[in-house]
Amino acid sequence: MDVQRANRQRALIGEVVDIAADARIEVWLRGGWAMDFFLGEVTRDHVDIDWFAWAADAPALHDALRRRGFQAVDGPPVQQQLDVVRDGEESSFAWLARDAAGRVGVRLRSPRAARTGGRRTPRVEASARCRRCGSPR
Image (cartoon, rainbow, N blue to C red; front, side):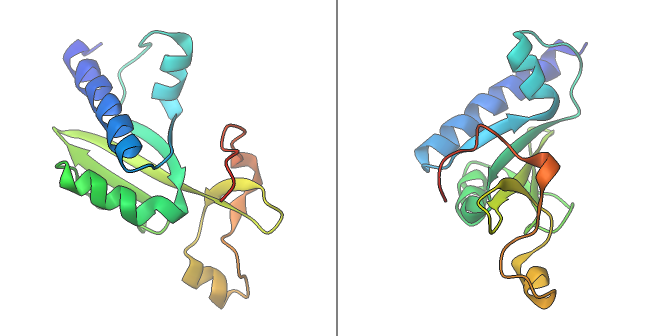
């Protein structure tokens, strides 16, 4: 295991939490790092740091991260996900939204694409619902 990389990534996790808190934006770890925090130990090398955040907070979070030196990298459309890099480490923010029934899920399409398909709310994937994401939006 690359201990230096794990330490860099843990420091970035702490910094993102602080950036989000300062901007009053909720974020949640997901993926491998979420599991390692749950287990209380680093179990493997991690390619990147995966996050959830509310889609409504995407512009503010992007601005806050950019002000702290994070740079956007190519990836899925920013309406679906934001991929950033700093200090050689990538972080990926998947956007959460509520469907018409109030269920939380991962935004899969942009609002424009949803409107052209006759939908007024973001499409969400029910299997990706997040129980901890209970704050009303």
